[in-house]
Image (tube, rainbow, N blue to C red; front, side, top):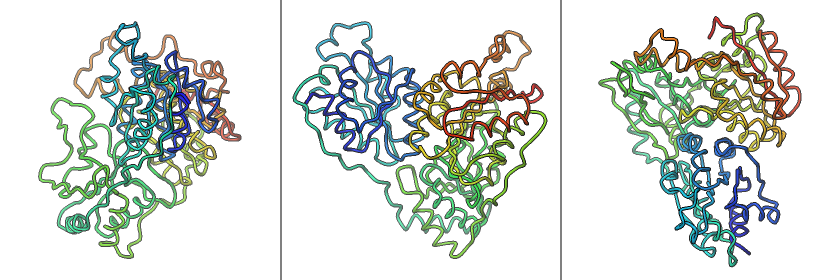
Length: 518
């Protein structure tokens, strides 16, 4: 067999059976080999950022890697923003990046670039295959690296002649590193800190955010009085009735500092010490208050859920965790605002839903409105690189075909990867997209104020304004095969959500928020 056949068969044998692809000339032998390996599902995307974001969403929900197929350095570059988000989410993901044939690289052809440098920014593992005979073993190593705790982006460069060369042979899956157990002595030290004097916070992230981990943390909270917080943008957060409500740390620095003020003991479980996203004049970038002692229960790569269970058994005994009640808001009526948008979602969110949240400033009321809904998973913008929502929803829908996906999407960042809608239509994915249309890059409007650069200048404000021309998301969606409707009131949004959720398949709702809320 040739190298491409050996590569694909090895990926499938290692559990990687889906590839989000935007191929070019250098990858044609990989494309041709797909017909001979039907176990590998190939999903076409029209932009590499959709491929990488979809692989991120798939990995978060499936717990195992998808592959991407990208064309040379420029294709990788187009996908880097969502690879950055995947890296921050600690998502297992395997990039296959095609390259020129080894003998062609010295000619410095127009698409020649430094793939190694580009990949190094987002990859926890990197290798360039140099011979057809070694390609499959390299692929097996890439999968093992991606699946090793806490989860990594692994990038394998595939030269065209290595792909088309004969003499390929498959390789057996390689062992990957499981999350390391936390030593009992560490659990005892943390238990002592949580029973000491002063306010305490249990700060959760990564693999602590499982149903078992959350319930164990809530038992600890019930016994010790420690407050529960989690990372501002968790990769995956189980939520809903019967589970503890864990508040993500606020994004703006002022409320984040206020939430942690006075804390004497901060326990980290799967999370790193909280810091500000950006530097701001006269505000600290490190959120741990002065005089607070930080205790590490489990770092990324360790088994935070089991550590929390051990901590709960040590401290809490039969303590009953506080969980969210089964309660929903009533379907809203009247003006369509950020609050009524959240209430509409809370009123109608179906059981087992996957919510992909890139609502940004329009999502301030979502957490409270959905806390008592049937159990669901919440996926967020882990790395802050916008344009993640639509692709992540695409991958999550493929990972979990029996679960409805609701994508709550700010309109400005939707345009970064709008062609994900085409892939959703082509694959007939059960994704309902709600565009939070406020006609502006509202988050940047707030940042302009926060960094002390606000002015009344017309030219500055124009860079944050998305009107003139207004974006027509109904036309954009229908043009890519996704049925769409526009909502201008809360009543219309409720009606359109019922329409979208009534049967499987992609739908889009353009929720035009009232100017008073913009």
